[in-house]
Structure formats: structure tokens, C-alpha cells
Image 1 (spheres, rainbow, N blue to C red):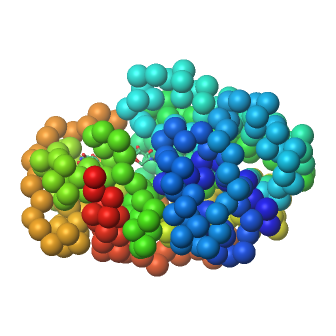
Image 2: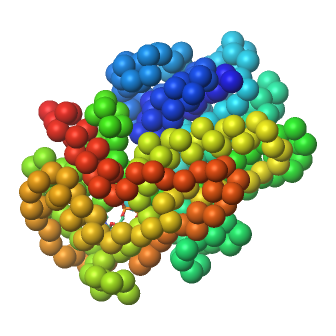
Image 3: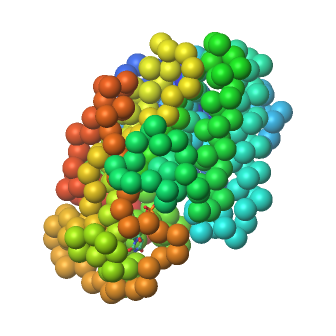
Amino acid sequence: MKILVTGGTGFIGSHTCVELIESGHEVVIVDNLYNSSIEVLDNIEAISGVKPKFYKVDILDRPSLEEVFKENDFDAIIHFAGYKAVGESVSIPLTYYQNNISGSLNIYELMQKYHVDNIVFSSSATVYGDNFEVPFKEEYGQGDTTNPYGTTKKFNEIILTDFARANKDISVVNLRYFNPIGAHPSGLLGEDPEGTPNNLVPYIAKVATGELDHLRVFGDDYDTPDGTGVRDYIHVVDLAKAHLKAVEYATSHKGAEVINVGSGKGYSVLEVLKAYEAACGKKLPYKIYPRREGDIAVCYADTTKAKELLGFEVFRGIEDMCRDSYNYMIRHKK
Ligand code: WQD
């Protein structure tokens, strides 16, 4: 298949491109390089043997985006491109709605115009909000999101579901990711955000390399075994493989589906820290801080549907995630 990957040089996008290429698919990337770099293309080539065709195009630039659709006859789209910082989305909501909603609508309208029938959308477990009991099941629907980033994910799922409902040829898979971490085992692809990371593992990684002094543990008084927040971490390579299965599912089914992609297991902040200490072979300092606003105590997936519909299961555990993250960090330490 010829697959358009928007945001294909990003963290999850780049790993997905590798999996798609290694399974014999042709990949075309559209990315504005806002939060990624052009060298990712060489690293995808170093791993997979193929350098994907690349367009430096912003999804808000409709004319340039249309040129991409004119020049290529796509079988499917995997849509990752979007802003993803929760805190930032609270400060600049309109920028998030403009990019993640208007930009996505450009993709969907061009899909319709150029008869591309299949799409996999990069959604998030954040759409469950804090309304439901764990494990989160797809049948719960959507909860009350607590920030504009989450709301853009929620709206995109709704838009795509309506789109599929109105067009019998359209197939949509909304993948709800839990907490993707880790890196490619080659050390060539991974996640190293600019500035101070918001997410747990990128933060711990910078404590491990000495760039940050200690981990701030946000709350130790949750109703969890050790009092710290529990999340469902999934290795980015497993997550990438889920996209391969989802895009293959989309092309052989019609209608819209929502599917969780997680491991189904929860680890606390202190358990993740311990696993990272084992991976890097040293003690990592931490201090307890107040709870972070908007955080829930426990979040993990019911993975039944992913297994039933996609035949998807995770193969990599927390040790693999921490080892691969650290391996990437030490290779990229400036
Ligand atoms: C995990 C746990 C924190 C940082 C977010 C988004 C979600 C998503 C993935 C994105 C929590 C604790 C964290 C730190 C800490 N999608 N923590 N110290 O909040 O589950 O999910 O990222 O694209 O939409 O909301 O992930 O990694 O930020 O936090 O103690 O410095 O680690 O309180 O319990 P979260 P996270």
C-alpha cells in the first residue's frame, strides 16, 4: 500500500514509518518539522533501508497539501500531525484548535476529494477524562476532557466517526494511545524534547544523563499502592506495530472503530523510576511535590478489543522501555 503519514518525522510517526517500510509498504511523509528534524529521514533509512518520500508541508497550508494528494495516489493515511503539549494547550487553546482541528479537516476534505478511503487517527486515552473506572474500555465512549489538547483529540474522533457514517466507503480507526515511551532499539529514533520535559520518562531520562537534578514526583497521596500515579506505559515500537495492524484492518473493513492501544498493565511513578535506575545502573534522585493539576490517580487500558480486532499484543515490558530510552539518550547526549 501507498500510505501518507502526517507527522511522520515525529516520535511515534517515525517508528511507525519503520514498521510500515519493513512490512513492504510505501511511505510518504508530510511534516512541517515543527517538533522534529530532517535527520530523522536518514535514521529511518539506516534502520529500514528506505528513505521515505518527504514533503515539508504544514497541514494548515491547504494548497501545498493538495499538491501532495495530486502527486500521489494514496491507499491510506495515518494522521499523527498535531500539537501535543497538554499545558501549552491550556495557555494557547486557539492555536491548538486551529492546528489540530482545522489542519485535520484539510486532511479529511482532501481524503474525500481524492478518494482516499482509509485513515488511522492518532487519538489518546485522555479522551476518557476522569469519568470512568479502570481498566478503560472503548465502550465507555468519551469523558470530559480536562484541557484543549484532549478536546482536539475528542473532536477529531467525532468528526471522523461522522465522516465514516456519512460515506459508506470510508474506514476509520481511532487509536487511543496510553503512555508511549521508549525508543528504537538501534538508538537512532527516540524522544528528546527541547527544554524541560512535561512527561515522566523524558524527564527521568534527563535526570539519568545529568541534565536535570532530580525527578519531581507529583503527589504521593493518591489511592494507589505506593501513593504515586499509575499509568499504562507502552513501548513505542509496540505502538508502531499497532498502527501497521490498524491500517491493514482499515483497508479490509468499513465504518469507524475506536481501539485502545496500551499494555493493560499499570506502573506507578516510583516503579518506573526504579526500572529506569536498573536500566542506567545508578540511583536517580527524586523529591515529592504536590499533585499536578488535572492528573488522575490511575489510568490503564482494557486491551481486549485490540487483541480481538487487530490481533495486537505488546511484546516489550517496562525494562525494555527504560533500556531503549536510556540507550537513545546516551547516544544523543549533546
Ligand atoms: C505520568 C505520571 C504524573 C512528570 C500525558 C497526557 C496524555 C498523553 C501522554 C500525549 C503521572 C507523573 C510526570 C513528572 C511526575 N498524550 N509525573 N513527574 O499525564 O499520564 O499523560 O502524556 O500526547 O494526553 O496527559 O503522562 O508522563 O506526564 O505523567 O511525577 O515530572 O507521572 O503525575 O502520574 P500523563 P505523564
